Length: 518
Image (tube, rainbow, N blue to C red; front, side, top):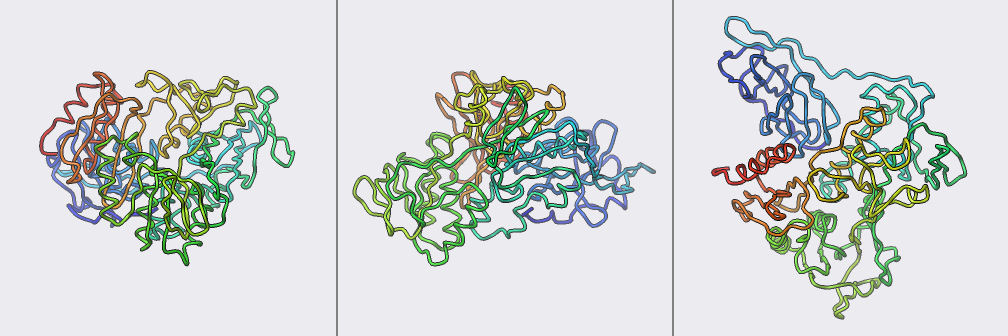
């Protein structure tokens, strides 16, 4: 995956460091065997673990320790400091660890231990079926093997590609800064070694919950013992005249993004319809390619319904300063071959149009099977549907978040991955409640946003620090409760607040927000 390795600095742990260099709960960055290493002291025991996150290569020394885990500052991956195991998404690969020894008042690192991969020769039963190969479906398939499941796993996907890094489609890959080899989450040989079978270009058209079988578009019927629905969402296609023209694109799949990039060859002017995350991230990416970009959206501020007016105003200013033309407060009347016509009558020249007006959850399969749906597939705290042995996770799952008054549905990558991991454990009978705090990130020009929690109906916001200086936070209040916190340039603070949300510790959240000198 993309990013850069942590620069080797600090002590060479193979030569030893004084034991009293670290107090309990502290960590120190150094190196051994030519790679960056963190040595951590918990109580009277020492741990040594690779210091580079296996997701996007962030420096884990900038993260935080919580109990026996190390959390990444960028995208909140979580690693076990004793085993190196990647405990939570978005990291999929574990980290190396080192044996330690204390001699003559000094700590030394001994043998390096790389994560041990186990190949599987699965039996044909039981058969677990996963419908969808996005974040949730992919994470579930891997977790089933990590948890020791030896039965058959088949993933059915309408996609033409093996699982890939979807968040990058509207960021570095679209901007031309990420090579194609970064995009695949795993190679085909990995899935073969784990006995995970992918049926690509396969559409599941029916689900029989009573008979425990799915039906493909070609009529093939497949029995399952347990099934995970991870069907995700489909881009919203507004009823706009001219939307079916060849120069109009949507961005959801890797194939969509490749097609979009291929068609940029002779393009100078792009109009993006929609100022949500995909629209704004794509605007920044396409500006990086030197294109003229105009964004049309009905709201007066971009993304204010999610990030609040303060951050919405900042994003508006940032995009305008970087040359993006914003046509906010406007709706589209029709799309012509060389322009987008607004309902005001204005004509925005366009060689290419990108429609980024959100997604609608794919619930048709669940509905046809008699599974309860309401703005998504309804699941309980174990991600179980109302039908025996059928689970749901990802963008279309609506679950009872313990910090919310009613079930919520969140359309973000890390949430889907973590749900897939939890669903996999529960398919194996673990009875693990899904209680992770929702998290997402976005990058647009020089603005990087981290957001933890979920606030759908906030009553007020409070700003801490300076958003203009990219060193601030916004708290979203519902009554006397803080429901979510958005941060810029405060990675450790975001991690600590996430942990406080996990503990339902409102006073701790307020204390962290009010700390000086962050």
